[in-house]
Length: 124
Image (cartoon, rainbow, N blue to C red):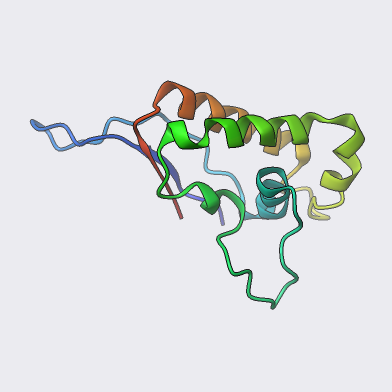
């Protein structure tokens, strides 16, 4: 299973299509890594109600411009060699979701948010 990630713009008045960038659909296995990178706090334990959205869903409903700084900071955290082991500990044993993959996805999201500041994140 993977996230469905969109940065939606206004619909075209003629054809009804959203203008939006092509974005990766990363595996849900990256949720703990994304969550730590975006919030700088660990996800709630399994079975515990989080009280907030987790992972990339933290971006949903926000404009690209509202998220650029958060995405930049998440990339700083993900790329910090001193923090690499804490992120690697969150990788699933089957390696379907790695720190390197998370960096690739977060870079694409940051770039899209920068290029489409008035578009709105929709992440399911």
